[in-house]
Length: 228
Image (tube, rainbow, N blue to C red; front, side):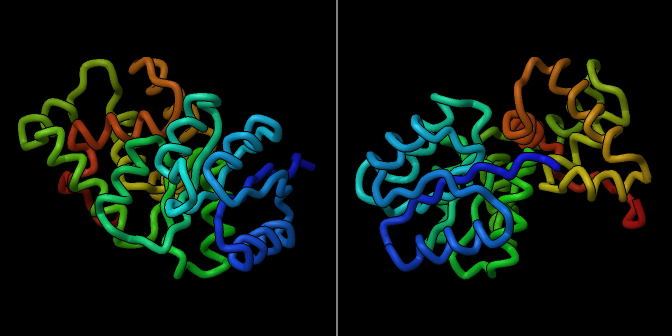
């Protein structure tokens, strides 16, 4: 059996924090720490080294964005899943830029939360429906992406056609399983394509890869057939 995913829960609302902790534990996750403030979160992160930090943004200082940045700086392999009452564009973008791998609003169901923690632990990016498009659109705007960038990136000299195809799907927030099903290839093959792409682009994880793909406009529809 695989080791259970180690999770830390950070929220200053005791009842909410306890409920999330209970749900995670019941689903087989190992909750290694809980915290009610940014300072407490960083101290306990150092001691417990969780794989995933489920983090509220509005916590006593330092806030969730600062905690995210510090967690990723201390351990680039850690994953931060924001679980916030706010779905405001500014909050979402600040969290993603700080290094968050996922962002759920607190109206998400228990099942959505558990699935998001699993996906984030596996290296996927996860957003509450509606927020993904917001994030992708803003990154395109900030990077000045346009038709020329998209065309150039689609024919990136270092990447094969299949690697570019997989990269497009990564940029759209699809999981490895979804990509494998769409392209009718194995999960392992998708992982190999992603690893090859990371190596060629000299990147370290899927978050960096997603940012690169968005900046290059690869999340744009490319006239791809709906049947894949």
